Length: 238
Image (cartoon, rainbow, N blue to C red; front, side, top):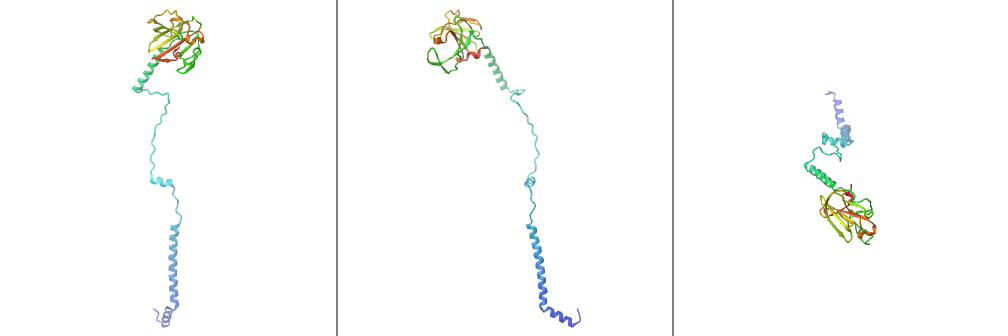
């Protein structure tokens, strides 16, 4: 502390003057400016744009990648067959073979030499030239001159021989499997009797006359049934 009374009085005068308050105001303003600077800086940091995070990164963080499971892929064609088919399939295959063999046993020969003109209508109505009406044609017509030989389509037993008003002389032969062949329009000189056994190709008569189809000329009307149902005879001809 100074021992000069003049200086002490000068300092006391300064403290009580306006200069003192001016200095204090300056200090306060400086402190306020510093606080505003740091406050503004902090807000600027908060308002600064944050780096974008890709969705893939978020998903990768939330969901860990699972290892890919290996899977064996086998391609099979329609023609490929298992080495060991199930028993049910074996039964079906054997059944198909039996049906095929059974049907093959009924395959026969054309009972008369000639052109097959009018075929099997398969239940559809066709115009009958002789009768002048519409009816089904349940067999095939084999064009041949009158007197031509008619032979057995396949081996079997004579089931019936009769004279029909519309179909002339008719011979029916029964074959294995409930197959019946019918020969219509034969001449009356049939040398067979009911119950006779015949083989494929054996002569059973000659081409004669068919009243119901006389407009077509001489021919043999040949029909075939299997278990009572009319079949297309040409499907059973070799």
